Length: 388
Image (cartoon, rainbow, N blue to C red; front, top):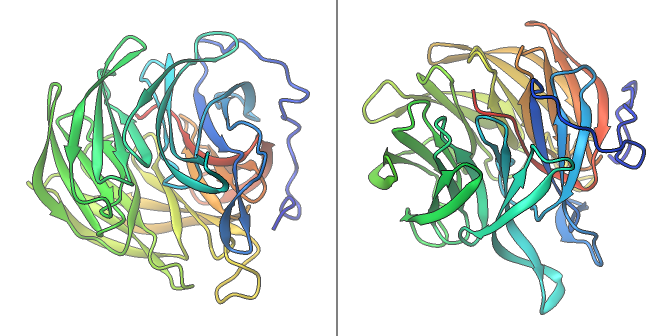
């Protein structure tokens, strides 16, 4: 699927015709990391020869329709979960990881990368103000609510990198070893009080529990087991539950969304719900009442393969304590990646890798509708707003 979905109005928001705008202080920002060196070819992720630089798109989500307000060049990667972006609590800067890069010895291959870019969101235009080394396969990244600590999950070396934050300056503060190089730490998510983090491990199907005491970050050696390939994760702003997608084996089977009870000590997996083929991104609504997930739905598979569909899905589930119930669904572009909510919970942006776009959706508590599309420069690979 390469074009727009039938009946979906395209929003003319490409940077080719839109100049940089100064971001208003009250704006809610969404930041999309876009990979120009990767493409989907008959169900395989391939390297694009002579690719232009990757980009990062900054979007004002506090207006409707949402508007692009800037773009900056920075490394990104569609390989890894779409939590490869994090935004500081005051929206002063964003962090973007790049888990893979083109092999300088063989431009047709990709190899693990370790880049962590710091992007100043207050400058006009936005600018990269720092590039740090995390670990190989740098993927999911999170910033605590205090804005003092960042964690990066390194899928290709079995570690989590720790960075201290002062203003807009990051400094390496060590690594936490979680497993061998095949354990696949994918995303690290803080609890709201900042005293604990959970790390999904898609290589050995575990979710690690990490303790956080100031700048001291340690593996508690406790872990949970949900489903096959735990991947993207989101923690409720209430601090009572977390949800995570399990990507499964990509054979056309339905996969699951799991619920973590954070009130238990240690936290435990307490529920699952089937959601469809290959859930990718998961994000709680700002009030913690819903979770939205992107589902590839076979759209990244080759035509004719078992389970192939020409579109992806966004599904929303209500959260009742530790139970999930279906609320709404809508068709979106294929090869779906990340998803974010507006502050009022009425507008969502969902990334489509095949269309190189963000689908704009509206939600009224019972109906979910795809109403527009924002084109971006590259395969949208990760997206976040400020963690609520």
